[in-house]
Amino acid sequence: MPEVDFLIVGGGDAGFSAARTLREEGAEGSILVVSRDPDPPYDRTAVSKSFLGGEKSHEDVLLGGPDWFTENNVELRNRTSAIKLDPEAHTVTLSDKDVVSYGKLLLATGANINRLRIPGSDLEGIHYLRTLGTAKGLRQDVDGIEHVALVGGSYIATEVAATLTALGRRCTIIMQEDVTLSRTFGKTAGGYFQKKLEDHGVVIHGGEDVEHFEGEGRVAAVLCKSGLRVEAEAVVVGVGAHPDVSLAKRAGLEIGERGGVVTDATLKTSAPDVWAAGDIAEYDSVVHHARIRIEHWDVAENQGKTAARSMLGATDPHDVVPYFFSDLSDWAWFEYVGPAYSWTEEIVRGSLEEDKFTVWYIDGDRLVAALAVDRGDDLERARELITSGEPVDREELAG
Image (cartoon, rainbow, N blue to C red; front, side, top):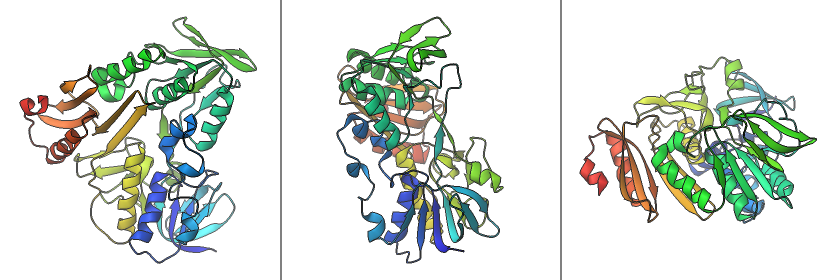
């Protein structure tokens, strides 16, 4: 039976960050990273942007470069899943039939995309973007076609619409929301980004539910319950994801209200010598004084660092204020700290018309989030206010 000191299940941002931090912090024991992805760990943000758009090559987006694992004596097994965890025996059974004995285990299994189970969903030309492979397949599929429909109004749909429009495709977004990105950032910021998309030719249909896809062999149109019909030669579906907790759940680990693996503030789970990080971690946040779970690459990367240090014996809580960013081609770029699950008031500093503003999200008298466009300095003040919980000065925020 193979034995390793540190076993990391998941080759995304959290898993790679943990492996790198273990070595940086002086861990000399054996490290095995198991990843179901066929590629070594890579920059996930490139999937919908720079890699899809062709600005970066496969090698450009690899985390740490192509030789990191060899140079740091870390074993990587691609195309391999963990299918059984026995916390008591400290073993993990892999899809290649190996049973690995571990000293410390990090679960960083990420999330699985939500799929539309509607008539026509098996037609060719319907894409779900999650990996470099799916991005490459989409890029090849849209080569030479004119019109792409995107289902969803959040990160994936808006980023891909911008990327493909910049490549010369005609894009139409179909979404349940009235305004793009409004579920996360509200209608003020969402309206700003929607206008940027529309100003560059993206057609947007809000308040729509997709009923089925039409076509013979290959998708030809998207049909909505309202009767709206959008012709398209390819479709990209971006309707969210759900945490991949199947391994943890079968092993009896505690699962939280937000669907993730429950951890304490150091990211340790309910099982001995098992930690969780990234999309699946539902952790006790000392910043928010609540249990939260977040799906974003920067959060995953920072949680990987915290989990690695905790595996080495540190007791410091994960206290990084969650940070997010997104860009729509070179039309718009924003940064955000939070997150705000709800808020009672928005204060805008700066000017949306001049493309330089901050939206402060307030719940009662506390700042819970901030979104900045070309005002990155405001985010440091936002972090201070979110962490301290002190009452806000509305005049200060309005500037």
